[in-house]
Image (cartoon, rainbow, N blue to C red):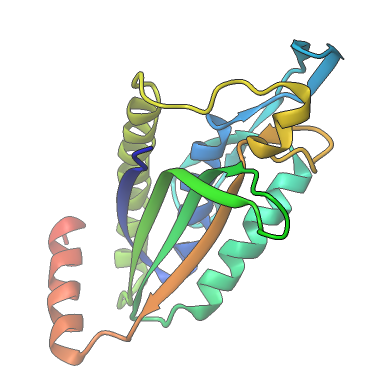
Length: 215
């Protein structure tokens, strides 16, 4: 099985890290989640509905849509909060959302987790000098996020591999059934932090962000 890999890049100031990352992760999971499966008998099931809600960002001019599951939101927020806390105020990092399915192994071996899609979000953090720059950044980052969301939807709507709908005995090999109100594909979130930018790189990045923000 070939694992699809997609990379999204965003440049934000420190206070925008959490909202920008949440917006992208929630957008992906919105399209990679179903309602709960209700099996009538083996091979026959119905799928419950998935509620959605609009989320307005505080530090970005942007509203995104997420699955209205408080449980799922808590899981994502915990990972994003740890990622944000690990980032320096002038650094870079990457947070990844990997979807996988389990392949049962014979005892005493552990089940094999086979990835089929990975989304990597590369985040660069910059410091801005004044409120005028922050306001322009607020607007421009919102525009960039809108473009990224459209990109995510286009990628997801391609007719490419998805795990086949499982039988009742196999459902836990494909979906996370631990949540009471939604059923996302099995996934995990990981992150890595790049060393703080050197002075020359930081200066170059600031010049780039200034150009991007049309200052």
